[in-house]
Picture (cartoon, rainbow, N blue to C red):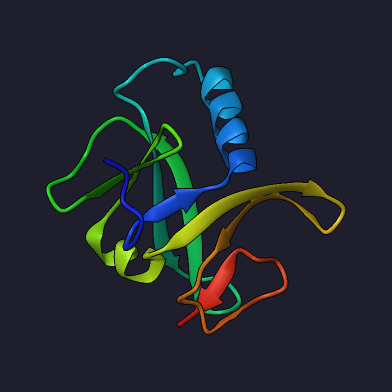
Length: 116
């Protein structure tokens, strides 16, 4: 069952990039690995996003799946990330992953930092 609300989502472009990066990291096809997303203090607006591959869940982790990608976040980060979509852009206005976060009251020009 795929959650349609109170979840974390991934765009088709971001999914393709995640799969490519998993292949480059040598963890493609290893079901124990997932995409860990989080929020950490810092950045120009006060909070920054964090992305990594991981294969160990922690007791308070929230686990989601969208478009076949397993996404895990800690409970504290999830409060900031609920209903956020992870996207990827390779355009001239900034290459890389971007978070389309409906909870952010403002974000900085780099798109990697936000405030609530």
